[in-house]
Length: 462
Image 1 (cartoon, one colour):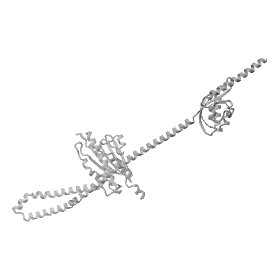
Image 2 (image 1 turned 120 degrees about the vertical axis):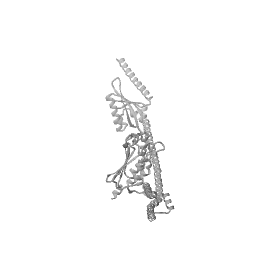
Image 3 (image 1 turned 180 degrees about the vertical axis):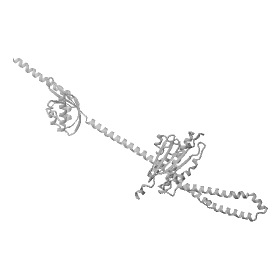
Image 4 (image 1 turned 60 degrees about the horizontal axis):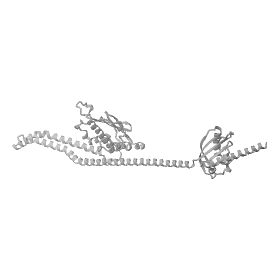
């Protein structure tokens, strides 16, 4: 009996020593791991901790063994840890999740904790946790995110600045070209006005003297008839000189010459008036003018381009003028718009001649190159002016860019791409109207101008 008891005492002592050896061996092994490791029983109490865990938490092993999360951490943090631990005990499924905790120095850490269930031979359940400190990684990631955000913002700012510079450059080029174009038109207007003034003086002198000269001539012929009546038998020298100058022919032809001179002088006066109407250099302010006079004067300036050429017959201009009252506008600028659109229409008809559209001998009269000009009072305060041609029309892709600055379908050196852009600006910005293009390939193109009869400022003041 005593021998059996001694054997049992020896076996229990040996078992305890073996357990202590195994525990010490396990502790030495996990202390060699740099990641914090802990072991909890099913009461959520720490029963085994490595040095890395104690150092990470900021408490000694003696302060932590047998304690729970609520003894060390704030309630908010302990609630999270307890809930995650209980989930592992309940489901027996390994979980990995990010958590936040505050160490003994008050520093907050972001950790990645892997928790799984462990059972011993006796069925006791334990929770094993391995912690990976993500604080520096998160800080680096946050710094990278901030850097990326700064870079993206800098990139966006750079793109915006680039866009603003491009827009400013485009506006500068647009303004420069408009200034050049406006200066050209101003110089042209001054030149035309100067020429018209210089021509007008001598023409007025000639025109004013033709009628008196015609009357004087008629008086001299009447006097001559009286001489012939009272002295029917002139001397030989007078008779010979009468035959030499063909007096009868002179008497019938001279009135015709005066009539022809009168018509020519009137034509010159009309041209001078058209030149002065087109230039309107003295009308920088908005005034009420006759739109039809502006159109006609503009056509007078470019009338040579309507004439027949080797490639095409004469361009017919068909006017369908409505009964318009005087329109308040910048007359000189509006004439510039008429000039741009009419020149474009002529160019379109010229381009049509390149494909021999007008050269067939079987050409119908209705198929001749034509420009239609239509005006009408659209509403009590809106005037519409349509200028159409029966040329080739404008492709859809080009029509979308017609009013863009510097866009042109003409060859290099034949167009600046500013005519329609400036026209659009004059109509929309200067006159509060609209400029629309309607075109069908193979049929023709029409530009429709709509402007107020009276500007809004005057309506509001009325």
